[in-house]
Structures are given as structure tokens and as C-alpha cells.
Image (cartoon, rainbow, N blue to C red; front, side, top):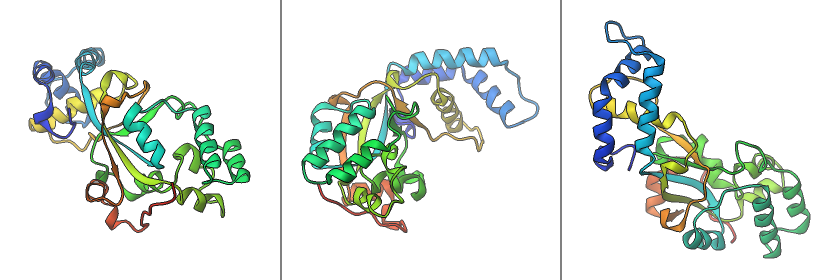
Amino acid sequence: MDMNKQDTWPDELLDHLRRHQAVFRAWELQKIGAQGGESVSGPDYDRALGELRKVLNNYTLHGYHCTRLIRPEIARIRSSGMQLPNEAMLHQRIESLRDGGLLDAANAAELIADNEAAEKNRAGRIWFCFFPPNLDSETGLSDLLSYWGGESLYNSHDTHAVRGPLLAGIGTPCLVEAEVPISSLRGPSFLDMKVARQFLIWNGLQTSEPVLHTDCAIEPLPARSILRIIEFPGSDFTALTGCDAWQKQLTVGRG
């Protein structure tokens, strides 16, 4: 299912949302301070959300992982899917670049010694945006697509006079488009709330509360879940990211 396209939502999900529409609507109206509506208790709302998540767990969610990859990594994802990142995996990726001549030994050692791959909000999590990436800002996307190794690596090196340009000169900006099993996402999360809110908006609710959703898979993603890997500078990549209007232009690097 696509969060932004009602015609992709399963009938089972829509039926469930219709049955609980009064509870979800009352909660959203309370949240924005609307007067005169019915009230709903926190436990009743939480119970309805929990039941919603059980339904959602039967389905997949259309999303994009924004990254920068070398050709062997692109081929590996197409054939084997996506594995959960961790410190050992990042070290192995860096060593592969070194052994392939894309990194010298000294800078490879610095990258291995200084990164955030073991941090709990990064290790074991594959992050996706479940909306067209162009709805995010250049600030939110540019670095993910500009530096090889992901945020856990470039956060420590992007401003370095040598290693910043080095990471920016490796790989191709890519969007990994996938159908992510909702059961593989961390839960409970704001996903359940945003699904209910999006349904209510389609049925007349006026609210400024967010519906765009970013979340992480905490299970490996098999190859069958990968729809395609969209590469810069292709037209689909440009349309999905809006990168042609960015101040900082993307480039294709070595590898």
C-alpha cells in the first residue's frame, strides 16, 4: 500500500478504519482543540490503534531508502535484498573499498576508527521515507545522496578537508524503492496514528498535524521486496527527489 494513494489501501484496512472512524476522529479533534465534538479516552484510542496495527501488519508499505552505492552494492541489493546495518558491516564495506583501490589504507583506517554505526538509533535499522522524497527538503536528502557510507559515516567526516570530498567522490546517488512489510517496522510507532489521520483527511478532516512518515525496518529486507534501484541522473530519480532544483548539485563518483 502507498500512504498517499487511497486506491492502494486494502479493503480490510478501509473497513477497519470505517468501523473505528468515530474514535479516531474524536481524538484528532481533541488534539487540535476543536470544540463541541465527542470525547474519547486515551485507553480507548490506544486500543483502537493497537487493533489497527494488527491489521496493518498483514500488508506492505511503499517506501524509499535514500543512499549512495557502488556498483557491487547495487547488484547485491538486487540479488539478496538489504541486510541490517551494524558496525561490522560498515567496516567490511570500507575494507572492500580499500581492497578495490577506491580508498587508501590510511583514510580507510580513519573511517573504521571514527563512525556512528554502533549507535542504537542506527545499528539494526534500515530507514525509509514512506512518501515521495521530493516532499522532503534538500537539507533532509542531500547529504544522504552525496556521501558514500550513510549518515553513520559521513556525520563524522563530511567537513574534513580530505575525507569529506573522498566520500563524496565514491558511488552513485540511489533510491532503493521497496515494498516494506509493516510487520518488519518497529512498533508501535506513529505509523498507526498517521494512517488513521490520513484516512480522516480523505473523509473531510481539516488538520495541520503531520501524515508524512519516516520509519525503520528492524528485520532484513528480502530481494523480493525490492522493486527497483533508481539511479542518478535518471529522469525518475530527478522527478522523485527534485534534485534538479537543489543548490548543491549531485554527482556520480567512482565505483
